[in-house]
Image (cartoon, rainbow, N blue to C red; front, side, top):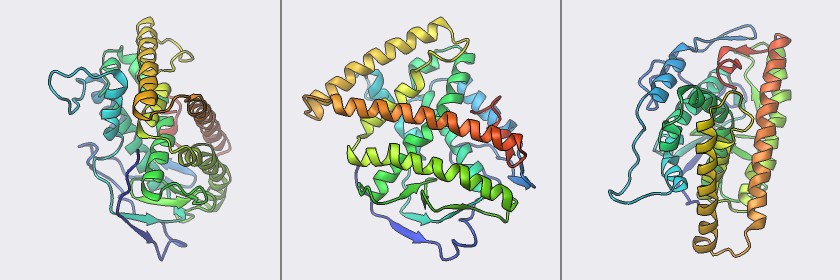
Length: 321
């Protein structure tokens, strides 16, 4: 279950004219790399993606990241996934949440960098994933990192703001929240036409995330273990990924078979739920919604690039989807 956290909500007095400050370049707790400046020229974000790609390659080609386990205890796949969940966060929860309704490109890019780095660490904490061919790991990470933010934001939102379905606040970064239906993009960094186009496209997407993912999380009080099961489905659904090896298909099938047994045990013996069909149906609906929203997001980014309204190499389909 989610635990309550004592925190302070800061409503930024200047939020109508400026977003929360974001570092122009960053050497973060997530990595030792010096991330490039986010420079915006007209509608294009001039961004050197190579430092991030190098970091991700080094993580994927490196050893499996250790978990805090008890020596001699065998952990089931979903248990280990649950233990690795902290890699999707920085290990520390903020005590102050900044509330804003204005987003700038620096914030968008920095958050995407964080999601990608933490996704790589999370996946490399999974011993089944570590043993896959390098090309398969890369393709799976690309797809996973575009979807994981939906779950991370839902978990964070419920953890910080509780189960009120009328509350439209959504955690956007680790310490910044916004209202899903009223946020805007900063016109000081991008042309007004670009800001308006981004708002028209991504505000409905954020609202969909609130309605299809976050509100069901609240209504059904989805647990972290169930959230981890959703992450497992997102990672190991490899049927539609081209050129994935037979080995990876076998590993995926075995992992999900064991995960299904674990989830059954969790419902019956920990949650004490005899008939969990409704909860399982809700989880599958959320996965389908995430798949659709992820595809829609990529299509919209491609459309914006085609009409020269917004482009950034970080969102190039060659790199991260």
